[in-house]
Image (tube, rainbow, N blue to C red; front, side, top):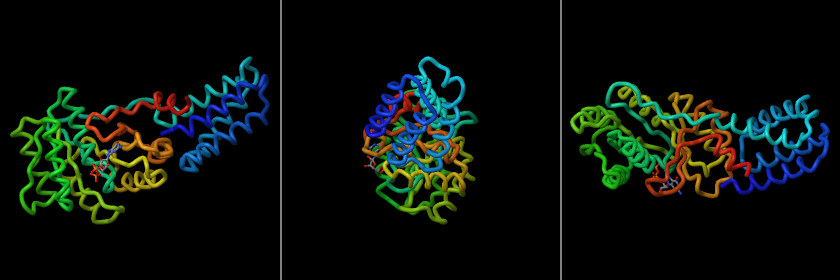
Length: 295
Ligand code: GDP
């Protein structure tokens, strides 16, 4: 997904390495390229501005200018700043607290919530936990069926809502169901809308109150670029999310969402979805992502 960005960075790095001595003008020229590359990758403009000015500040400093390999020094600074932007280190899920621990998945329709719920169940099962899936998206009956089928594939229990049961009633019943199934973790799939709306947020707030989730993870589609960041900001404001799962990173998105979401919301990216298969969910590692981007 980062092909264009990687190619642009490679060009800038070649230029930097090619200069025997770096002048402030050289650095400015290189950073202009970095800025353009990031904007073209759909990175949030505020994030780009801060990122570039941080590099500039460090790059024109004594330590670089007097170094024998100033180009390499600047490249090192870009690496370091990119890792910082992405969140420094992997942030594991917090699954502390009395059983069942709840993970609430929220996000817009089509972002990949239902698929991600099942992927997460598989991951936790492999880690030796006993997750249980809970379909609380009552507006899209197909979503309940979809989660039931996926639960069967993963081999974990799935709460079966009654006819016309409300999301609030589903999650309350699911807490008891988890006990009867000896499950230690509830993964709750919630309804999404095409756009953020009041009703959706109100409903999610009620579910949050009933469940006191240990994690509220926002599932966002990386392909939606800047929009993904706006969605993340809005959900965070309303629900105080604890992390983000970026899906469809295997697609041809330009990468902007991956690079901006942490900086804009302050929330860590915990996982990335890299395919439709159930094992296509990876822990997000800022340093590995940075190396992938910079080539
Ligand atoms: P929901 O409406 O948020 O529950 O979204 P779904 O879970 O139904 O997913 C919508 C579509 O996105 C489905 O076709 C999924 O297979 C697909 N999808 C979800 N995550 C990923 C991913 O990481 N990569 C790819 N390529 N497709 C994904």
